[in-house]
Every structure is written in structure tokens, then in C-alpha cells.
Image (tube, rainbow, N blue to C red; front, side, top):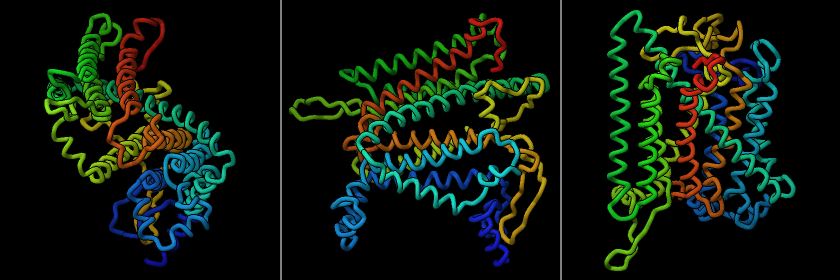
Length: 462
């Protein structure tokens, strides 16, 4: 078994075989899942390196604990204290290598619909070779001439790519809300219990949204000051009421009978989440107390205690954030998501109501056309008839995610002096990016409601 497993892993690293674990007791894995997992692993690896490069603590520990540190830095031409390997400029270079890697694969896999083609074999295999290519591209970025011009130009590319990544996620969120409502309302014709489930879902969503608004009003405002927070909470709370009223208005219902409070409840919850995230990312406000000492206001008292252990907060918060980014990448690269961005949706007649509708497998992924056992984990080759997701779109989303990570780690427009330890200290650029994302999400949802009224001759699937 050991020899067969080693042979299988060698074929995975240097050939076209799918990757799997050597443990035979592990559950079966599909080839399409294995491929996406490996690319996600590469993405995580480079992201961790970027976080380490932005860490003041790691740089200090390396300088103190590595013998002949300065001699090593001079030997690899990274500066006297390896200053070229830390800071925002190093993250820009490494992210350039990762983004270029995914962009090249995006171009390579355009219009690949058959897993038996040469380009599909490259996409699904040769993992060790691709790891070497990725490492070479990340390292090679440090030797690009005229670094100042490169960093300035790449910053604008990163801003554009990061914003586009956010917009795609917002579009898919709106699509998710409509798909959820359409799926559950499809079950009403067969079983009236779906009415109760819909009502329960709406009640939970609006309870969460209203509860979040009340808690933010309690903890992020006070009787004097906090003007920004009060205005934003009022505006975003009003927007949630607006989209709810528009969703159930008679004119919208006449053109979109499936529109309802479930979709607006999902959007309202997300608006409240982004509002909370924005207020948490805002630089702290300070005032003079009666003893003429600066005190921080407009933030919860318990959060000031948490920020004392900045390493713990930064570590846990950064890990959670990038898990969310990775989840967004993987869920937005399914065939259903890529088709949703092109306006292709399942017809109501073919919709089957399910409680966990979002976990449904793609296309023919359920069909176990070929099973391979190599002494380790069993691999199901589920793409014999055709690809179960868009390879090109998959790489394009990871290309944008690379740019989004680069801008997020370097604090967007406040890159000078940015450190991972200050990740949650708050900057105005991060605050406005999140707040504008909130408003764009509302506008996208409102457009899906009023578009049939503005263009009555067009057919809208959502």
C-alpha cells in the first residue's frame, strides 16, 4: 500500500493525477474538489507569507534569534536588516507573483470545457512544478527594475482588482438572497409548511438586523459626540427600512411576484454586519475629560481591554478574515455562481425546494464515472463528461482575491507604516471601503427590484 501511495503522490506532484491523502480511512474526494483545495492551499501559503512580512514582531524576533542576521541580509542583497523583505513593498512584490500566477492560468484555461484536454491536465496536475513556478514568480518580483514606478502602478491595479472582488461578492450575495427565496417559495405549491419556514426565516433575519442596530446604538454612540456613528447608523437603518418597503410594494410585486421580505432580510443583516465592521475599523475618537486627559469614545469599553493584547486580537482576527476571503473565493467559483454573473439561472419549473439548497452539488458532480484507489484516499474522477466548474473564472476570482488580500494587509491607502499588529487599529480608508460596499450592496439589490419597472420589455431572471 505504501509503495502505491508514494507512486500516486509522485504522479500528483509531477503528473496529471489528482492529489489525495495517503490515509485510506479518509472519505472519498472528487477530482474537482481536490484541484480547488490545492490552489486554495497555495493561496493560503502566500497569504501567510504576506502577513509575516507585515509583522513587526516577526522581524524583531528574527533579528534577535538568527545568528549572523545582518551578514545573511547583505549576502542576499536584501539590505542591511532585510528591509526589502518586510513592509508593504515586499507584500506588493509577493502579491504580484501570486496574482500573475493565477492570471496566467486564467488565460490558459479560457474556454476549457473538457477535462481531457492538454490545458485541463495542466490545471488539474503537476502540483510540485506549479509550486516551483509560483515560488519563482514571487521571488522574481523582487528583481523588477525601477521599483518605485512598479509599486505606484501596481498599487492602482491592486485598488481596481480589490474593488472588483468586493463587487463580485456583493452581486453573488444579492443573487443568493433571490435564489433562497425562489427555492423556498417553489416548495409552497407542494407543501404549505414552507410558508411557516419562510416566516421563521424572515423573523430570524429581521430580529438579527434590529438587534444588531440596537447594540451598535448602545455601544458605538453616546449622548455627546460620536456624530459620525449616529449619522451612519441612522442612514443604514433607514436603508434597511427602504429596501423592505420597496420589496413588498404593489408595483414591484406586480412585476416580481417572488420578491419579498426574505431577500430584504438577508440584505439588511449584511448591511448591519458591514456597518459594525466599518465602525470597528474607524480610527478612535478622543476627547478631554474633566481631568484634562485624553479618553477614547464611541467604542465599546470591553474592546479597549481586548486591544491590550494586540498580538492575540490580530492573530485571531486576521485568521478569521482570511478564512472568510477563502470561503468567498471557493463558493463564488462554482458553475452556478459563474452562470449567475452572466445572468443564467434555473427556471422556476426546475426548482426543487430544499432546506440546504446552497449545498447542492454542481451538475454531474454526483456521477461517479471513474473511481481510482492508489493505496490511500479514494479519488472520484467526476469530470469525465465535462468540467463541473469554470476553470478560467476560478483563476480569475483568485487573481482578484490576491489583489484584495494585498490591499487589505497593507491598509489600502494607508500603506506607509502599515503593520499586521495594527490591522484592527482602524484607518479611514478601510472604514470608507466597507461603508461604501454597504451602500453598493443596497443599490444592487434595489436595482434588481426596480429594473423590471424601468425596462418592462426586458426579461429579468432574478
